[in-house]
Image 1 (cartoon, rainbow, N blue to C red):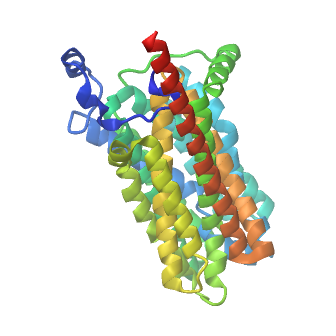
Image 2 (cartoon, helix red, strand yellow):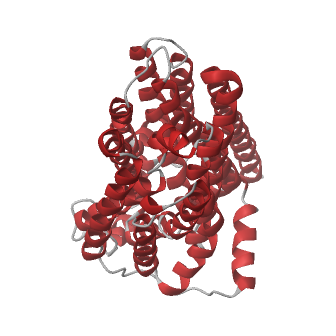
Image 3 (cartoon, rainbow, N blue to C red):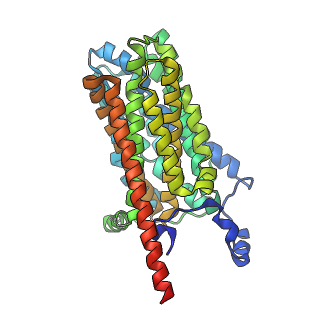
Length: 433
């Protein structure tokens, strides 16, 4: 049985054992590979798309204390400016993936970025919290065309052995966007307020969107799919019937629950006693996202050494260690905790999302869309539940939510390991007959 059917770990280094005939056939493969024509342009274009996506999607996260003060609302209410954006993305990612099957990945990604940056330029003028939340929901829905279409584009245009690395670079762009958005907004908001800060992010996203469209190579391996609801429903049903895909979707959601909760609430914790940091310094805390850039871009090598499940165990353990360290009242330990949480999250996300693209042989955009939907449901859940836990139990409450989510990741991975062993034994018995 194949790894997709058994849940066995997909090894990046397995290509070395491919027979000579397969090697010859791969030499005629016109898909992109590191060092080949168009690969750098493609990688940089999608990196910029990732920067714009995360910068816009989480543009209000570091500013929540200021938004709370401006509108006179609690953390749990202000957190809806994040949850609405990620919730909108989660709801619309599947329909947008269907559009990309019909109209093409590059077309849908370009249109999505154009609408999202347009809304981003309106966000600074929101007169009330309700209007701000509504605009953020529309922005999230527009951004839904990016994640699933990008991973489907990569699965079609990049050779399989380079896929984990290519997706890792896209995820690295997400981390840079998340970091730069929060750092920039933190310092700008300290001087000129949160409205000017989100306006600056909108302008940055405009530049990224233009460069993305100019750099991304035209797809060569895209095949037009059907928009018929019956075809879409069958594709989604087939993906959800795959136990490995179901596990990967749940893992993505749980990792993002941790990350969404931690980074929604951390600004409140650091602006309060015993730290009482100014907004600019709080924004600079998000420089730890650079750790995520490294861990996501090296996910391919991690899978090559440990296998997919081994990489997920390591990512989960790293995240859990970071959560526990962040309970300390020492700023140095809190920062170290954030470093570990960020490294573990981005590694786990890169491993899980690339496994989805490898597992799905048809309807890749829908397979990726289901993963992204689960992932951003996790983000919305983490943002909302993490803020509620902070309101009722302080930072320890938010950490408790995160630890439970990591335990879920480990439990699902253990279950997958056992399922793979059972399937392997069954295959051995069948082969022996």
